[in-house]
Length: 182
Image (cartoon, rainbow, N blue to C red; front, side, top):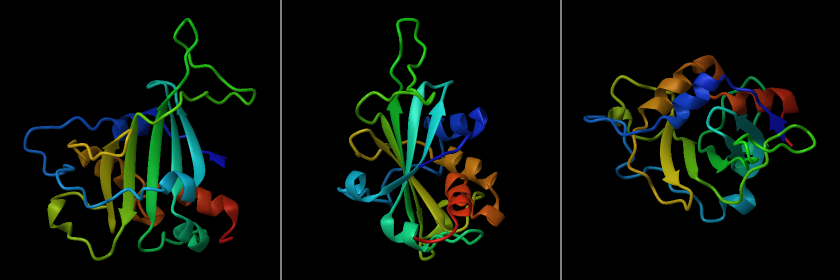
């Protein structure tokens, strides 16, 4: 597992999914379905501690895509990433408790899930003005039920990663550091 440090502004942007009136980027009918067994099958490749929001974010990739990742290459079509957020355990002063390695200790259970899937065949007409290559996004509550929230922040944030990084942050870095497929 790799610790990836992302700027707090990017983490906040991804977490800022409050619905906006007239927003065309919403999760009304999710185009991404969470696999029922993702927690058992998917590979956690990054963990990010967010001190501002006091959460621990675990980032997972589906096993097929994980096996096909190559440094400097776009993620394979069909790649599914899941970000699972948990609250950090807090001490009596409200500060996150840390393990021996300095990482936040998560509370049990998820408070929110976000998914990102690469699909070259999807309908891009639903994203006027925002594109992230072939990537699409969805938001879910901690139990995996779709949330009707704005996804514009997801598209906007990942545009910062640019096409040269396949609009990813942690996955691109992880592929580069692990030196290719399994």
